[in-house]
Length: 187
Image 1: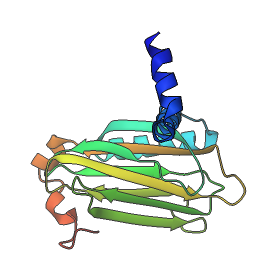
Image 2: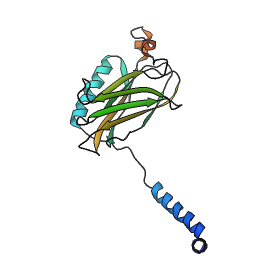
Image 3: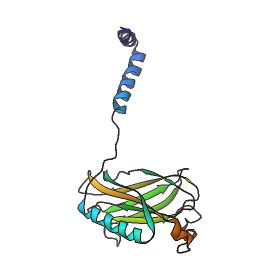
Image 4: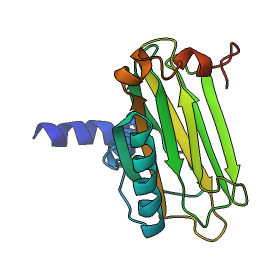
């Protein structure tokens, strides 16, 4: 009954009717949520296993990993909490058929602290890897993107976050200050 009253009132007033339609459209669009979907690619799986083995031997511990279904030319934001002074290794692996791979990383104040770009013919090819030592303990956002002219959707990507173990740093085997970001904020 109450709903019928509101609908009749809204229908009589064109201004309220417009607002009512806008709210209905907004609530309908709000139902569609973007969810990160996983994907599977044998070549990427082989690269992931190889990189896990390599970084594990170098004293890194895998903190997070995810396969992500991506669209060509669209960034896929990945938010991670980082601790001040810790030594992190980030890896993004893109679909082998893509022509361009980029990763931008931002700190909590939305300043770009890292930018990396690979092209298909580069030595590293579809893998972007970089070390980062945050100046503050805060959330950071990594935004990988890949460009593919043939496939626009269903591109497989993979992200990994490693952290150097405390034993390696404390024994003097590595020096995280030596790889700290450049003073201007971008490596």
